[in-house]
Image (tube, rainbow, N blue to C red; front, side, top):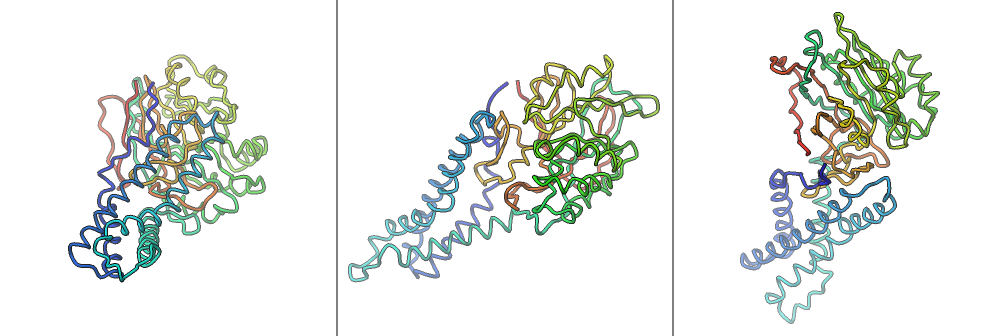
Length: 413
């Protein structure tokens, strides 16, 4: 297994239109405020581009280091890198752009002008920074206080040995609601509004159903129980659920008609064929006992592992698990253009922030989740419901009715 973080796998070319728009906005501010000749305007544009490249290199360096960290051992160190990232992104652009303009235009400035560093270059830099912030938030922002239905992300998974009765079975994957003061029950229901058109056979919830307030557990359990699936709704706990109490969570979910799994396995029967759902306790807080859960699964049975965090994917591969579903990382929640995901509470850093991965026999599907943690913002990381269709090798996949793009898959040796 390699240790390359997914931050390094962000396709840089996909951000070029956004970069061109931001550079054009910078040059426009220069033209409006400084009223330069064409030659000087060109020089100013080149200087701003050079400053932009410096900023991208610094931000990408921070995100790359953060993406490689084992967060279970270096959480406090990660906070320092996050502070450095905030300083670079919020505090450095204005003086760097002002200095770049000063250096680029020093020859065109007359001695009698005596233009200070803070004026008018600082005005241009401040205007550029505010423009960039507005453009980024408008282009990629998802806010908990302005909830929209989550995207449906279809994923087709081929499972060797899948019984014919299970071919075409659809599993909707929910994760990371974080229902609480920030993601209120009404907002959580708004995010789940798109689930009805997915028409899943099974709904699985991968945990962090509530945030840090246990008083939200009854309503959160009802929200999960309101999901429609003919073969049932199943849930495991996340690290926030552990903080709020998994005993009470089990009671509330059971009362809402949801099957709660904690180091347990249950069969879902379709015309005499069984799909075993293996649910473990939260790996991030050390509650997962995969051996105990798998001991309940008959030899040779088709099994799907439900784990809040991907931190036990190596164990899943060792046990020959064919399909593992996880969340916890929120897809990074804040994905920075040209750099990648900034958040990733995992021993693998941000390596498995989102998408699909193949590790030995195990097909890992990571969900970006539905809610937010700490701040009411997702950036270039919209909430999603993953809709998995199980197929046998060589079978014809059913038509896609979700009108959503597929996630990318990665192979790891």
